[in-house]
Amino acid sequence: MAAFAALVAGTMFIVYAYRGDLASPGVAGAAHQRLAGTETAKPKDAPAQPKAPTAPQGGAAPVVLYDFDALPDPIKNTLQHIVEAAQNGNIDEMLPVLQENELPPMLAAAAVSDSIAFWRKASVDGEGRDILAAMLNVFSSGFVRTGEGKDAMYVWPYFAETDLTKLTPAQEVELYRIVPPAQALEMEKAGKYTYYRAGIGSDGVWHYFLR
Image 1: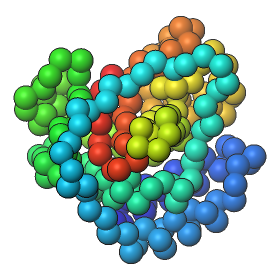
Image 2: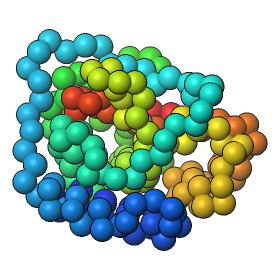
Image 3: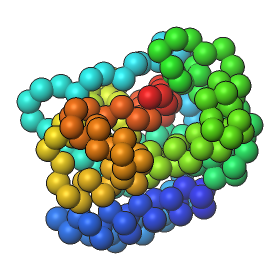
């Protein structure tokens, strides 16, 4: 819990430093107090297949959210477990988090039978530490909600649902915190985010973490 609260606190401090138009950072303090007593259980119903991320839709830009306190309690619970495991620095610590999920989250377009082995193979150091760092960076960013009710999905970072050709200077700084600058510039030219993204349903089920 402390790890998640620390992540939220760091996020709020940086975000509000750049985005004075948003709600007061005092919201972060309230979030920490509420999170301290959060205990939620996953639904017992038969699981549905994980939902794949969708491409950004045309029309109005999605509303970017930074208030973790506004998230449904099941999502806070899932985020807490992910963050605490990732900050441990050992990719094996992610296994209990995956096992708590109704189904393993999607990690690639093709099915992955062993998530931990997949992350190790995909990592630079062979230990998955850069993958864990990517998780922390992604989940510390602003996010958006797509869909409604039971179909609602919370997506990190919000860039996954944003036209990157229309970023403000402050948003570019946020993008550089997640993506290497040279890669970020290429994304801005193309208008499409192609780095790690994550989706968690309103029921707390972690649906995907992939590129």
